[in-house]
Length: 117
Length: 116
Image (cartoon, rainbow over all chains, first blue to last red):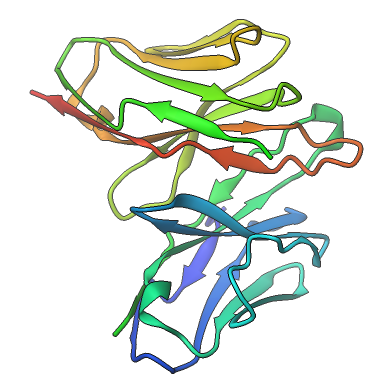
């Protein structure tokens, strides 16, 4: 399995531009998570999807951020308009959530390093 | 909500020594505690996990211990090697089931450096 695939790996953009980050989860996984990682705040959960439905978006910082999961094999995180404080590494993770095991191992992608100038 | 504190923030050891990283959590309902290793330029990868009905778990050179009463858990790496150098994250979760989806709350991370 190729694992969780994120694109692009690096993105440099100017303030005010729209940014779209992409994620392909591991085939068969029904849970998907978007995280943001910064030195100051560490790893923060932005949004969680289960079976393509957003379940918890309480971590989305503001209305400029939106996420979609149109099907089981693709998700996007969009920032519009982008600001310098959005600069961070954004990770996507997927999980074969199994209620019976009472745990969900999350498999992370390599991340997208976003720089907003 | 859950709060996870991790210490130390940096740890430097000589090759062959042991390394210990400690975490505390606030929500007594948490019952699943994974540890992730993040190498430079990569995403976090699970290295070991423990559930609340177990006090200790070992996998070769790494082990995790859990004290539910005190609400803390620790990662132990023995016979450290330079390739163990990375950032390590602990996390806590109310395991998936019922109304919980197993949200992970991460600690702030520990930068481990193993000197040859």
